[in-house]
Length: 240
Image (tube, rainbow, N blue to C red; front, side, top):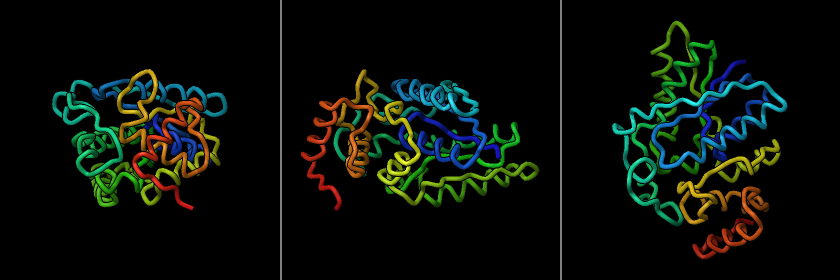
């Protein structure tokens, strides 16, 4: 079965890619350029697709929609605000919201699905996101799925978010079983040569790997030890 996947190059969407491949899907992956403050995730999306191509067929398109940047530039991911450090709080996480991002990207993905005859569009929204991000919530997925269906009655397409009820740590657990090459994924919002280890998404990534009892393979042993110390300084207590 054909499916379109929104692939950012991060942990979640890369795991979803491997999950869909394990279920026999023929994947067309779309990676969007929309005026992000850096291109690291895009570079890593290309890397993980190249790894997949060693064993499976996959289409990968880089979709440049930067002309809309001025219309949605807001917060620390596309605007000029500083990237917040530490655990996500509502205030910090709101600083990383890009207005209507997922609605825009998923609408384009749905249009492409109609064009190529795919019946499903996938994105990697998960439970750790939807407490703050409006476009990662079940209500959003259900509403946009309905809108996509109504907008394409002659060529119906379904919107799928199979990770919506699981955490990032559970996603990593699944990915480890699927042998996702996490060293080929990028999360840090700052986009420097190496992960900063301090921004909200770095903290969340460290936590997910620590809860699985493994070192993040993107990091050197020294970087990993530093990341864990930063996490502990935030009074993180691993679950039993």
